Length: 367
Image (cartoon, rainbow, N blue to C red; front, side, top):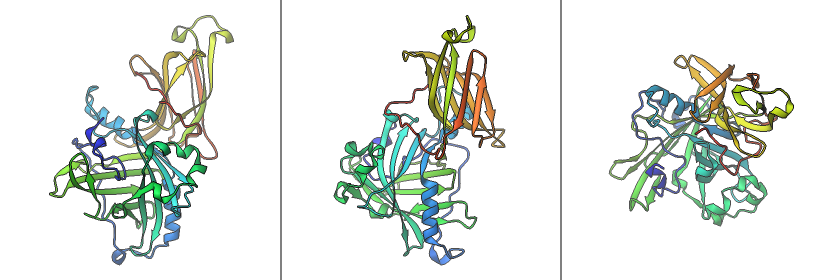
């Protein structure tokens, strides 16, 4: 685990990027003041749109994949950690407004949970913006799975939360109308670090659209020394996950085949993957792994000119693809037939933004 995750900064909005060098940076515009806003905003409409876009599960698998591909050294670490985000709308009467339960874990692994929060969006008429407030639980362990029992959250009391008003993020709609830029007030968010035994200043910049969420966070001491954050200004680039349900039929003899007949085949039904790189081991009836896994991922090729939804059959021993198929990234169905192995997947409806069966244990990945 990177050391910055244990800095004791209990009120940071999201995990910051690594300080490793990356060739391309995403320039973040400054949040406009009310005096320079291009046109009057309907803040209630903005609140509704931000809430709709924010809800879902997000992952930066493609960013990590492309960074590793660019280095072409299997032993080299990517410049950013892979982070899976869950932002689930919940009802918390003690807070009011548009509230989300937030969970963040590394490598799409529920066992590597590192942050649980409540986020609240509200209209801020004074700044002519949508304000994001962040809350931490005084007893985080007791609430880390509360999104699975939303009725519990209706009984949550404000005294069970901590709140840092100076660390709010203020969002403004951009002129193109297809994204919002948010930022903390420069220099305002100061947090005492137990590990460093001194105060640190946190700054967050966020870009949100219907399908993309970019997060750039920094922490510096009061002398301006960087504690964490990407030195090249490259944010974590998350994309909203879409969940698919599918089935698998695999011959017990694997690629070598064997006698035909239903008794020689193993079937898995109602299994779930998401579009941002989740892997799933293929198992036999007794739970033993077959030596193969499936992975669904949206990926870009030819310098971001070609975008595809890929379905890969992986060899667990090597992590390499045995075979793969691709489709338009917005496809709702995808499948593969190798005779000894067959699989088909369809996007979940009516709402494919959330895992329909959240896993209490890791989903399983190739070795």
